[in-house]
Length: 202
Length: 119
Image (cartoon, rainbow over all chains, first blue to last red; front, side, top):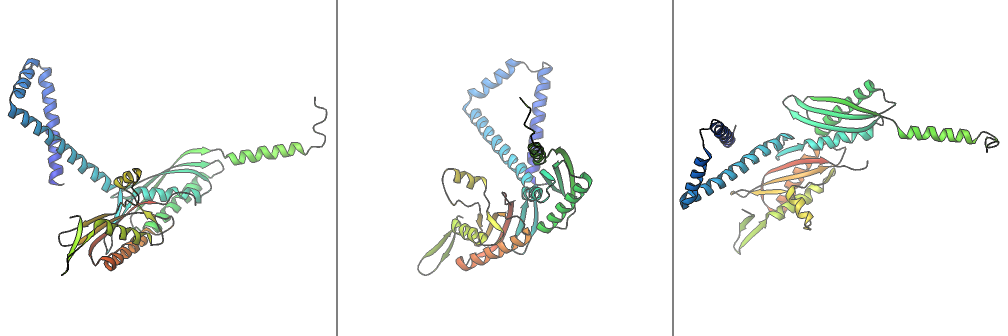
């Protein structure tokens, strides 16, 4: 862990402890509001103390800002798959992998909707998929096929040797509207072909 | 340092970072399989306010005049990403060396996404 990160963590721990102590002292009635008022009046009366407080405020904001950047940067770095080549580094955003998997929904007609979530950690690449299937699909066969296709596609496109774990969650089995419409049309056609079917009706 | 500088008997030649960025962008887009150069927050905001051709390519020039380029990319669906990234790195290196005589330290490629849309 970097020195700055440690410093930031220690700083926040100390600050939270101080706030906690103040609250405890206040709850035990050891600190009277008048004392706080006196302290504030004392600090405001002197020019030097006001400057010191103002500078401390700026410093606190700067520390918080840089600490937030360190944390966010760390999170951002973790959201990529990286490998080095002779010319430099190549990083692949996990959202790019998600885009790639999303395109697979177009290849398999039984899959109506597909929402992937990709995580890369020490275990390898973990793909979690939430799928909506069409009603005629055989789930065990289809999910197994989807896992195979996704795995081979990731290996083919990314060229990685890492372990790929694919978890599928079938969220919904959707009724195929096309099929429904087709049935209705067929029924209509059937009725219209019956001779003299319109006669005798008022 | 904002620009690369070289001196000859007649004067100084400065190459702005934007020039390096533009060369890299064109060279990257030449490779088949590259949809376009990606965007970052800054270039997205600049495009919103109407500034066109704002590139998200980051260029760093060290004190020893070594250039480090970071290229965000959107790749077309169906292409092998490591192969495309390698070809982009090579093409950008060649283009920069040919056009600017700069010493290239690193060309980092960041694949931001796969082309979306109709198949």
